[in-house]
Image 1 (cartoon, one colour):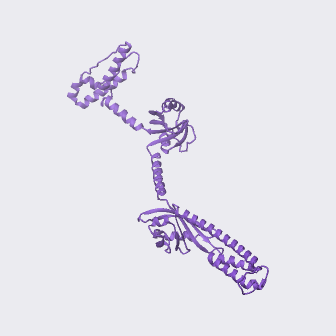
Image 2 (image 1 turned 90 degrees about the vertical axis):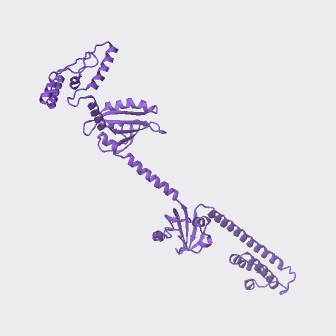
Image 3 (image 1 turned 30 degrees about the vertical axis):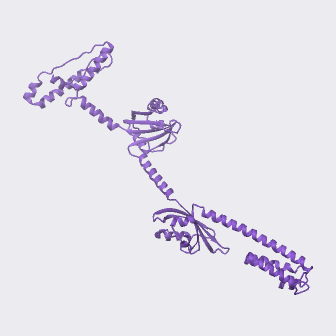
Length: 433
């Protein structure tokens, strides 16, 4: 009203328009209803005091257009205000619904850590109501021993670095430790003063458990694959994809990574490589499992060793096979020694009765099948018993060994097949006949 008198004066052309800025300011500061009251008051006061006859509330034809224009413009400002407020309200409600519907727990707090907002998930996770949490200091479930480290991370927040991730253990409403990850975002004003901190967190206990199990599995797998017993190699079309260290040790190869090389690099001669390929791949290509014992040359020592080979195609991987090599040289030697003990006389080293009977069965079977003759010669050693009686069994043993050596020296090598001549002698067996 003062502006209308000062700039327009009574009977001015647009005295009411000077009140429009006051309407806008009132809408912003006081809201809708106080502004409506102010518009009505300004309209009545201006109608009475700014148009003749002054001070009378009667019909004034000159003032009506001014009042109408003012009311229309005021209504336009009020409509704009209502639309803006409704839009803001919808956005705020949508934002709140979005936060409340999140599976993450969300909270906001002041720079000193006092909570000013928590969503429902946050309350449920810590088994507290919003009223219990609002106003309290944050970190209700954080382990006390970790608070210093968490605060140290929060101290790094700045306008240039407004976010930080915190991953740590917390205590839930059930009192059980859980792992949670928080994305912390700081909000600063124009003067770089910290205004508010927002936390968005989610439970990562299952992820941590999976990572721990996977880590344990990988560690166990590495222990198994790099064991000191079985050599392993993964092959694609006779090209090495992967191998463990034990394979290199078993075959006596130089310590190197053979990935990408041909499997021929694993063998000291081409014949073994070619023979193994011819025998094994038809078996494993038919989805079978190849098992055999091969004699190969140990590259470092130059000695022949026996290895047990197992190979098979890997499922769901075309042309990829997996092989295991086990050094069985000692087992072979022990088995051969056991067979020698079982089939040879301990004193003379000659084949015993058991081996003699086995070879006789083979010779007779061969003779029947081919129509050949089988000759058997029985030799008696004179004077053995008197030697034992007169000089003792020790002297008799010397006599047996000497007789065995002389017979072996005078029997030609064993030939089979052909003329079948049994050159198997057992002095101990002959002596018992």
